[in-house]
Image (cartoon, rainbow, N blue to C red; front, side, top):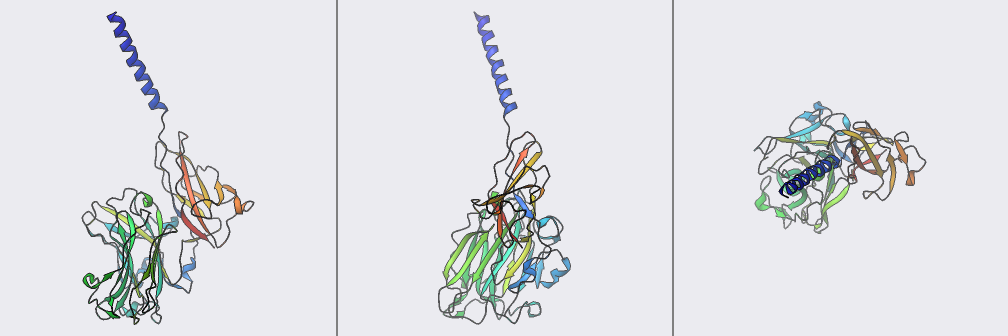
Length: 396
């Protein structure tokens, strides 16, 4: 009897081991959902010739960086949006508060008059756009500062208003501030926080630019600051991320009855109040300042899509893309066949099929905005989930 019991125990152990081995052998971990890192852009962007544009810089020409009144940080070959060109690197050595930034002065700025752009104009409604890329392993949440628009008033860099685009944890937020009381500028210096009146920094964006949402790919960030009519509370501050309105502040009193100066500077910033917890960097590209909405980069009607590197078990076998005319994907117009190309795919009839409003066509419509979603397949045949709809681009 004892021998029989020992035999049964031994048999159950062997069976359990075999079941475990079989389950491990048959369970496949799926790849991570990828992103469309960037899109091949037209050599000549509309912003380069648009009369509404105050400033354009794709950072491809290092010599043109001398146009900035103040600048820091290196221009680098990689990474770069669209697979060509250069970008601005913002460095964060461990414990440092960041290295890298650009300052553009325009309109009626009293500062750096020899570098002021469109110095004969006055601006009360300004949009500014950048593309931002963080590495997959970005650590520590948001570096506090990203950009700001401001109105400088003489003397000594006093500010009548500031439109901050700052981090809120992993998200972004708007934090507008006024330096005016009873029609008079009360700030006495730059960043005179004690004399600024803060107009509200909530809610923050749903999109986590410094977290999983924005990790590893180029994200379009656009902001707007519209001054109030003197004496009225009708000012506006807005923030779009990846083509979606993520935060806004309405009915703002930026300047009371003060009207001597308009918005006259936009700064790109790296400053991290607490310092970076590790050595890391992020990158900026395609910087535009305009008096009209800017939107995403411009592409051909058969653009090239560039996918993020494969992340998952084994190796990549294939990937697949869908294109839609809306950010929710309810109006799809093209779907690729599974592609074995490593990371680049041109939209067309040889790589996929047009559908919906574009059925029977061989290219996207001109002067339209499109959104992407993508998935990838491992060499074991397992597909990732589809990515969110993202990376809008506009055709010309």
